[in-house]
Amino acid sequence: MAIVFELVVNYGQDHAAVENAGRIVAAHPPLTAGPHLIRLHEPLVTTVHDAAGLPYLEMSVIPAQVGCKVALDGNRPQLRLTSEELSELGAGLYTLLATLTGYRAARAGWDPEVFVDPVELRREWAEELAAGALPGLVVAEDVRLGVPMNAFVRFTDGFLWIPYESGRPSFGPSV
Image: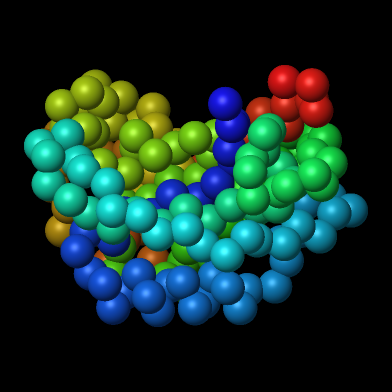
């Protein structure tokens, strides 16, 4: 089973926006994490279904050699990042996200897919949302989560977020 450090972005049904984002990500230079320059794999776009059964386009941006057992990495060894390096990498993913538009929700971290479904957020994570306990969550201003969004602050034009917190160290190669 793969454990992936990534940026996951929910594009709803906006095919043009996800195609444009894919071009931006594919052309993006490597991200910095301490002394490491970490390239990004080509973005993966899939159609998934939200908690209500409705489809949406999900884009995953996966830094190379950071996760554990990530098929895209092939036989390349995993980088063992410190929490500070992982935090820097996460911040770089959010800097990249700030250049993208048209999405509904996004989050970077270890396997963050469940946190980009607004229906799931409303149903299962309302208490954490209200408390600001989902750091790094970014939502479009018009996404209604059904809770007071006092913990959210401006991310970029049209988007709000609960500011990102530092990451945990990478898993060792034997995980």
